[in-house]
Image (spheres, rainbow, N blue to C red):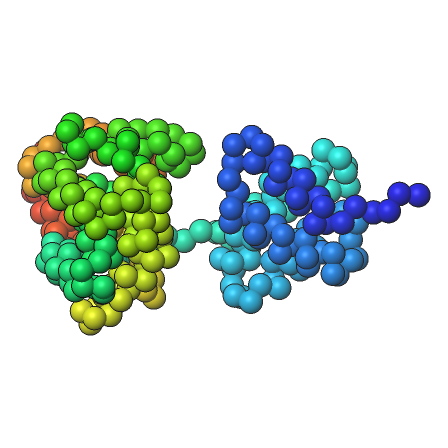
Length: 315
C-alpha cells in the first residue's frame, strides 16, 4: 500500500506547475505552504475539504473575514488542481467569508509634499555618497512616471534611453514590455544622476541604472526605509488606511494627479484614461480606475459638474 502523499508535496507540485506556465505565485506560494504545514500537522484529512479550508483560514494570527476570505480564495485554485487527481476534493465556495478584498485608501501626495521629500532626500547619509542622489532620483521618477518600484529598480543602463527620453520596461507585471516616454525635466534629472553615479561609482558591480555606493543595485527594502525615514523626519503621518508611508503611493498619486490635469485642461477624460492605463502598464482600464482616490480637487470638480447637471447643463 502506497504511503499517503504529504500536503507539502502536493502544494510544491502545484506551485511548480503554475510557475511552469509563467505565473510567479510569490504570495500565493507562501500561503499555500502555510496551508500544507497546517494540514500535515492536523493530519485528519486525506482530501481537501471545505472543513479543512475553513479550519486553516481561521487559524490565521490576523483574525477577520477579509483575511479568511483571502486564504480561501488562494485555496480555490489549488483545489481545482487537486480535483484532477482526487474526485473527493471539495472546492471551497467563492465568498465563503464574504469579500476577500477591500480597497484601502492610499496616501496621495500633494505637490508641496513631493517637493519637500525631494529636498529632504538631499540630507540622507552618507553626505557625499550615492544614497541621497539615488533616493531623490528614484522618488522623483516614481512620482513623475507612475512606475512600479520594481520596474524602476530593475532598469538597466540599456533600458534608459537618455537621448530619446524613453524608458524600456523589460519585465513588467504579467511579463509585459512597454515604452515609457518621459517629460524633458525627468530626462534631465536622470542625466544628472547618471553623471554623478559614474563619477562616484566608476566600476559598478552590475549594469543597473540605480546603484548603491558599493556598485550593487539599489533594492526595494532600502528605498522603503529611506522613504519612511524622510517622512518621520518631516513629521508626517500617512493619510488614508495604511499605517505607514508606501512607495506604491507614488503610483496612486501619479494616476490621480494625471486625471486631475485632464479635467483642468479640458481633455476628454474617458479617452485620456485609456492612454493613461497603457502608459502605466495596466492590462485593462478597470485596473486604472481602481487607483482613483477622491482628493479635494477632484471632488470639487465632481461637485461643480453635478451642480451644472441639476441646473440642466449638458456638461
